[in-house]
Image 1 (cartoon, rainbow, N blue to C red):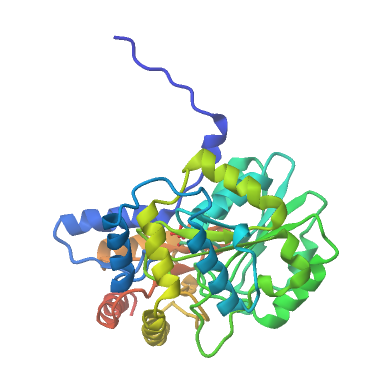
Image 2: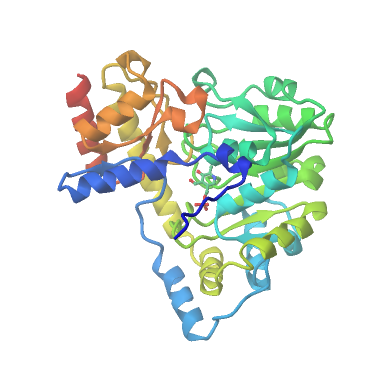
Length: 392
Ligand code: PLP
C-alpha cells in the first residue's frame, strides 16, 4: 500500500491556536492521574445555563424544530437580538443586519477573512484574545498590535491607536471589557478614538463586546455602537457564551453594517448553514426571559474579583491591578524573576493550579499570567494558598 503524501495549504502554517485549550488538556491529564487540579485557566462561567433556557431548547426539540433555519437565524431570534441591543445600548437597529452564528469566534473569523489579505493591515489588541492575531496571520494580512499596558489599566491611548492607522489599514479590532486583562476602555478614550476615526473612513471596526454586561464598581460599558458616524462600518460582536453561561451551546451574533451583511450571510451559508435550531430557541429564551441569573452571576464574579486581587497582591513577586470587567485577573509576575510560561508551568505541575501564560495572548503578555476567577470562592482561596506556598 502506498503511504499518503499530502500537501496542505501554505497559509495553514500561519494559523495559531488558543493555549487555554492546551492548558485545559494538560489539567485534565493531571486530573486523570489522580491530582486535585484547580482550574483557573479556562475562560468560561462556572455557572450552569439557567433552567428556563435549557427548557426552551428541550421544548424546541419536542416541538419538531429539527430542520435547517434561515442562515442568519430564525427571524424571531434576530428580532430578540435587536431588542436586546436597544435595551443595553439604547440604539435601535435593523434585525435584518443581525447574523447569528455558532459562537463569538465565528464573527471574528468572518470579519478578518473579509478584510484580510496580503498587503492589508489589521489592528488588534495585544495582549488580546489569541484568535485575532492567529486569523489575521492566516489571512495573509499584517497584524498590527494595539498595545494594552498596565500603566493605562490595560486600556489604550486613543491618539496612539490612531497613529498606527496607515492607508493599508482595513480593520481595527477593539475588545472592551477585555480578555485576558480585565481592562475596560473608559468613555473619554472611546470618545477620542471615535472622533479620530472620522478622518479614516477606510477603516472598518470590529467591536468585540462579548463581556459587555460584566463591568464592576459601577463602571459603564461603552459600546462603539453609540457613535452614530461609525455605524456604516461597525461590526458589533456579542453572544450568549459568557452572559448566559452558554459556552458549549455555540451561539453568538453580530450586527453587521448594511454593506457587509450579505457577505456575512454568504460566509455562513458556505461554512455552517445555520446555528442548530434548538440552540436558537434557547437563545431567544435567554434574551426574552428574566435576567436575574445574569445579575447574580456578575455579582458573584465581583465578589471573587476582590478576593483574587487581594490574594494575588499578597504573593511575592506578583502585583495585580484591579480588573474593571470580564472575569480575569492579569497579575504582573516579573518580580518572580521567571517568564510567564515558567510561572504557568510551575503553577500547573507543582501547585496543580491551571492558569494561562500572558504570552499566549501576544508578545506583550510577557511578565503576566491570566487567572480566571470563574470558579468558586473556596477554590480560588485554595488555589491561591497553593501559589503562596510556592512563592512566599
Ligand atoms: N471574544 C472574546 C474576547 C473572548 O474572550 C471569547 C471567548 O473566550 C470569544 C470572543 C469567543 O466566544 P465564543 O465561545 O462565543 O466563541
